[in-house]
Image 1 (cartoon, one colour):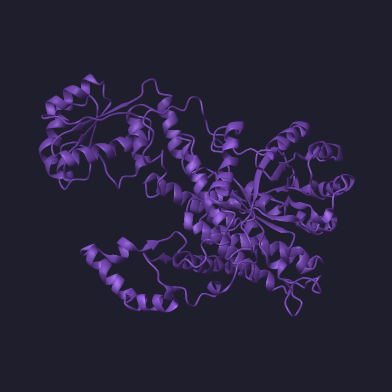
Image 2 (cartoon, rainbow, N blue to C red):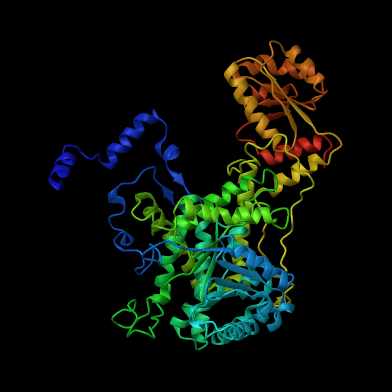
Length: 635
């Protein structure tokens, strides 16, 4: 059989890379290869349209196996099982306990409790964990930074009282002073020293992590993949160095760090991000030479006694809120589904799917159930939990992983060379960089360079907000930790927020503006431009009226007036605008806002006749719609 296969393939000559490029250039018919085929990523590197075996032959990751240092292919060897996590805001310990017990019977095996500072008492924790077995599931706790040590001691007491095997309990305490600096602009740096005490407080819980790197905050503020990864590595290294300097051994400190990362909508880039993150973090920890305390029995220690287990990056991935929308909110399900797929295929340790209604309300039981089921679908129907590192060996993903790793490493070194993550956060450099990215992405969305389905592209023409308004970022813990400073904070304005404000303003107007498509002339062009114009204007909440076509300008104007049009959009071909635009403008005689769909060669001539409004693919959609709202008296 082997001989037959060898003979079969020997009959085919494998094309070289240049031969593929030559063939593509033929099909491009003179178009620029670099402009048409090369993906210029936001991460600062270019990706080619195709890859071959020769592109990955020198990559070290290709020769490694799952579960092997540097863990680019995952921490696990035999499966890809992850924790299905749901977070619960604790307003009443008893009610939170009842909810926890309920969802544990619905597929969840990881709980995240967000506990206000005043509720951190042994009695409340006992109530919260009543009938919950800490050995059977993962438990994660988030509370005020100043209460973390107290909470840790309470957990040890409660677990001991329950008769648990403390060595088998898995979970985390979310202690992260740097996040406080980034999100609130408060100087919480003095609290970092508490980290050593916190680690010592949970010595009895070896599988509990208590130093958190919440780079999810960066993703929710709009960060690119390389930015989240580069800063997350510097963030983790800051805590690792601080703990080592505080007398905690490197192996213990590394095993106490948990990365709570975000997942954005860039499908393959997100897969590469987690793979690259594990690889880079493994090398960072390895530089500290962590010594294995169980080298006599541990199979994952080196011959020199170095602890390879400490080099494993533990990641909880949460789907982002940055690209979630208030309008057409069910599209959020599509976004979070692909995001959770990226995380699962990248072999993370646990996943939180953000409910689709998070932008405008406290998630309902329905939205939380759907969010849980999104993960269960990946496990039970798609069997994503069965195979380790599905992406491994893919020419594209392996190359993307390497390229992203290089870019993130460059940012990591830049932060380290300038004093580390804490210094960068206190000086506001991280916030300024991410906020600049946020502004860039908002600007790109305004120009439709970054599409949001249902918002600036293919909006639902008939949808109303029905009283929905955007919720401000809320935290149940009114934490007083940290000193008030002039440090800038991250901007968490969602990508769709500008368009939502525009549409809500339109809804509050006395009359919904009517945009009438006056289609005339060339059939293909008028239909294409009418469709474009309808999508363009409906993003502001206007009622759009499309038409099959008119034989004369006068017929179209008459129909527009009968429809009580506030806006008339002339849709035709570039050549025919010279014939139709000026007569239409004059016949309309100021009775409605007049727009030409396109950017015809005769634009200057039309502008000389008083025609001011043109919409086309290069238009700034947001600014244009704001201008139209102002013309229509909508504020």
